[in-house]
Length: 150
Image (cartoon, rainbow, N blue to C red; front, side, top):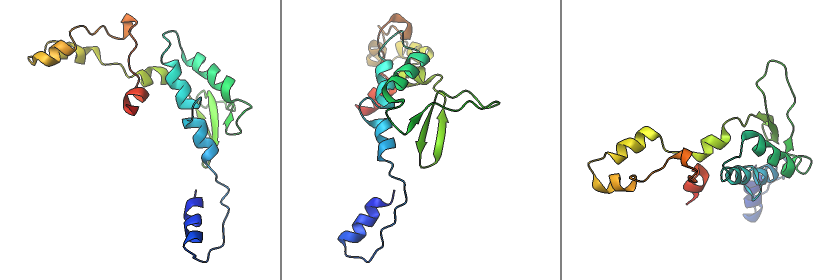
């Protein structure tokens, strides 16, 4: 966490005793962000119409369980909400529930909003959405991750 700051002190010749905080977060960051990381798998699953929360969970387990020390099966705790996986990082082990992640990542347009656009007095806006088929048509919608990274 403070590794870069300590390296900067060393470069500038500042007397400094290196402190190992034991928090190299790169492995956890890679698990989340790198190709075939959690977000990449989520993005990939959003491309498949029959994907579900459980197929997403299965892919996470296939790619990371037993292969990354930061990815674990969550402990079942009576009275606690269901968790699907756990990440070990600086805050300790944190459980995650993936229910609805696929739908949230797809970020479809609200049908009411589309209807308003289609009836807009601004011709260009009405034309842009004239043939909008919606989420149920089988047409692949741009996900929130893809759209935000463009």
